[in-house]
Image (spheres, rainbow, N blue to C red):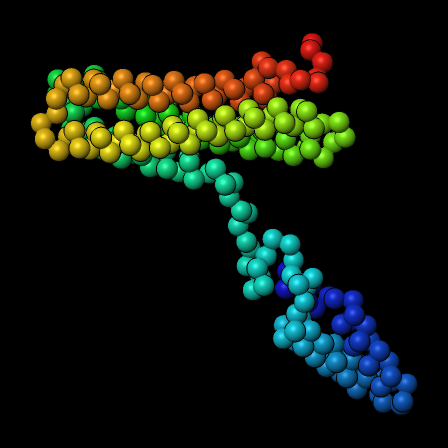
Length: 224
């Protein structure tokens, strides 16, 4: 914060010492105060702005005093990509909402949005598992459990990334399919592919739920 530059104890002390010395040699009080203020402000400018140290920068701020955004989770891009694909898919499907493929189109749009939401949830669950792994690694005797959780974490992330890639690919195929008069059979086939993608995400959700408290008991932990 900017106020810390003015309230730094050494800068205040330098001004106080300068003012005290000026008064000690016989200068009037007001003159001593002025000298102390000048020295204090000089210290603020020189050491607070011109030659500021890393320790002078408040946590969570840039050197210019601007708040810095917290770093995004490395898997967060999956959620962004999935939702972008879902939005694009829904826009492509909109012309089919009033035709003979209306029911299929609505079902597909519901499914892609459900997949995108599940991927976003998996990103959050992945972060929780990673945090638990790091806690176990730092804990004596937690090696076996951490290895187990790392394996399950890898499975969750694999399904999360695979589903994101597959959803984007399905959106691309849907776009190509609609570039000409859509074949009902091809549209139904794509709807089946979306169900398979969703099934893969559901398995990832089940793995995460098991690890984080509703099913599986990692080795080395007592059962209840």
